[in-house]
Each structure stands twice: as C-alpha cells, then as structure tokens.
Image (cartoon, rainbow, N blue to C red; front, side, top):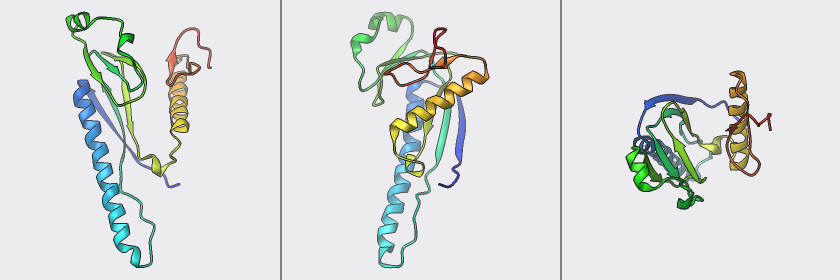
Length: 166
C-alpha cells in the first residue's frame, strides 16, 4: 500500500447542517473521480492495461458545533431525554442522519472529527477501520493524561473515571 496524504481542515465553529453539506460535497467529488476513472479504464481495456487508481482525496475535518442532537439510522427517537419544546427553548438543533448509532449530542467546546477517506485505498473492512480509529483516539487521549477506552458492545471511545484502558 502506498502512503496516502490526508488533508486536514479545521472548520472552526460551524452548524451541523453546513458541516454535513461540506462533507457530502467532498464525498460526491470523490465518487465523481472514481466514476470517471472507472469509465476511462473501461475505454482503455482494449489496449494493454495499466493499473488505474482513482485520484480521490482523503480528509480529516475538525469542527465545533453549536448545540445539536443527531439521530443515527439505528437510533430511536424515544431515547431523546428532553422534549422538542425543551430542546427548542435551549436552542438545540436536531437532525436525522444516515450514520450509525443512536442519539449523539455535539456542543460548544467539543471537537468533532470527521474523516472522509477512500477506504479502497487502505482496506474495506469497516469493523477493522472503526477499531483502529478508536485506538488512535485512545492513544492520543492517553498522551494528554486522559483515561479513555471502549465500552463492550458499543462503537466509540468513552471517557469515564471507571474505564481503566479497556
């Protein structure tokens, strides 16, 4: 596997919808590049073939959102612990997403990282990818003296005084 360049972008503070739209635009650009590359590969298949690799780009976006709840594909609305009225009074937005997970809260002073990677350039095992991403976060937090770990049966990194490097 060749070394891959990952472009880092600090988006600062940005509302969830704008950040989502930006991620979607980056993804769609990569999809377009892959489609064009595959079409070109098919056209040239009559000649001696070269190995074509799509010119997709990898990104790591960091952002801080104003208060927002998101509900993932496997989530249940009844898991939201406040009413719509309470949420609106507190100025908290709400979005259904096509991502995994249940209810997630993002808010001020929380850094959210969004990787946009062409996993075909690495490997396509999403479970492996998620575990390795979690491990990077756990090790990074450890460098700052913040104990973190995994929670059995759940995806993600959890910071809790009771977690002892699970």
